[in-house]
Length: 89
Image (cartoon, rainbow, N blue to C red; front, top):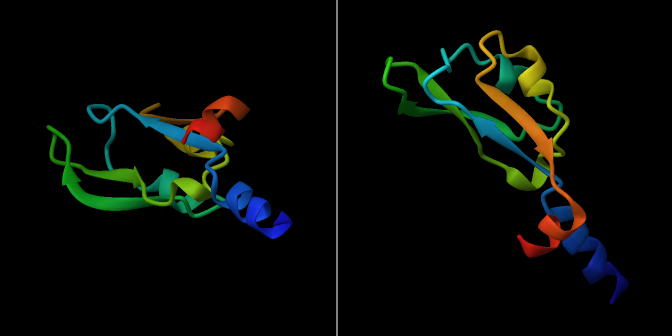
């Protein structure tokens, strides 16, 4: 029974990212510097024609905000989820 709870805890997202699609230039810094590998580039384009990143593996995101710290255009940032938010998702 304990292992089932541990498994649920491991797969629950601890963080998320917010992306301002219009600011993104598709530089891939957020993807390359994500320490958990939660982000990936997509084929989706923003209005300026740049490829966009996505949170492909939300269970890996811890909300550390390294993506936001490396983004030269302030187009993305990470945020930690509160315990209650984690349980709801």
